[in-house]
Structure formats: structure tokens, C-alpha cells
Image 1: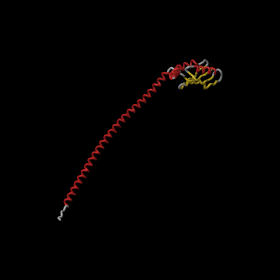
Image 2: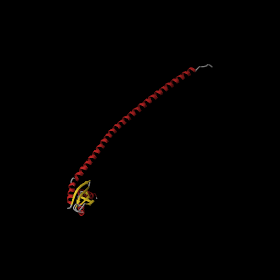
Image 3: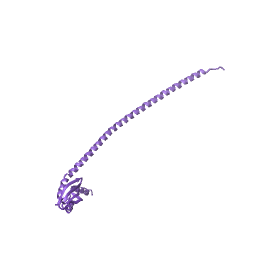
Image 4: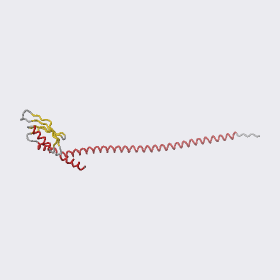
Amino acid sequence: MPRINLVPWREAERKQKRQEFGVGAVGALVLAGAIAFAVNLQMSSAIGAQNERNQYLKDETAKLDKQIAEILELDQEKQRLVARMQVIEQLERSRAEVVHLFDQLVRTLPDGIYLTSIKQTDRKVQLRGIAQSSSRVSNYMRNIDASEWMADPSLDILETKGGTATGSDFTLNATQENPNLKAAAGGAAQGAH
């Protein structure tokens, strides 16, 4: 039987398969690189777009923070103005009270009593004076209690000096009232029922 040498044919086939495998491997590497590049490009684009959105949100948040600060400043200014208006309204309402207070001091003062000082702190009025007798001080307290512009008289000090000619020193406290405010508060309370 004749012998046929098939080695070069097999060797050529192996070489061709190696080349095909190499070309396939290089092609797969190139394809994998292209896919990785495309994915990287798409991810970079998505990250860039998200960074732009984040920056836009930061800018808008900064604008809103400025507007909120301005609103808070305006609110504080409004509160200061409202407080000033309330003080002015209170002063307008109580403007005549001093006149009424002095008028009531004169009207309630009985004969035989002389005031030496008057001191007012908020709604409290302190009266110091000299009375010919303690009964005149009692009469003065009744007059104050009957007054519509003064109330709650209380005697702090009543001391008799040296003889009957000099009289007694007294210190009397009372509360200043405003019947107009009482009437307005009473009307508001009745309207609420």
C-alpha cells in the first residue's frame, strides 16, 4: 500500500484555524473596546447632563434663599411697623388721659388736703401730700374710689407730725382708669356672646 503524507495539509489547516482564531480574537477585542468606548461615552454624557441639572438646582436654590432672606427682612420690617403703629394708636387713645387724670385729682381733692407730689408709673399713681386730719384722707380715698378715671385707692403711709397745726403726711396709691376703654372692652365682650 502506498503511503500518503497528510502532514502538510493538516499543518496548513491548523495554521489557517490559528489565523482565524487570532482574527476572531482581535475582532472580539476590537468589538469589546468599541462597546466599552460607547458605554463610557454614554455614561460620560449622562454624568455631564446630571451635573448640569445639579448645578441648575443649586443656582435656583441660591436664588430662592436670597428671596427667602428678603421676605424675612420684609416680615421683620412689617412687625416693627405694626409695633410702631400700635404704640402710636395707644398714645392717640391715651392722649386725653393725662388731662382727665389731673382734672380728677382736682375734683376729688377735698378741703384741708394739699398734694406735695404726684408720681405716675404705667397705670399706677402715687400721691403724697399733707392732710389736716386722717378723716380728710379717708374722704379723699372715697372720692378717688367714686371717680371714673381713678380706682383702687390704698393708703401706704399716714404719719402725724409735731402738732395739730402741721397736719399729717400721707402717701396714697391709686390706679389710673379709662372708662372709654372699659366701655369698648365691654361692648366687644357682649358682641362675642
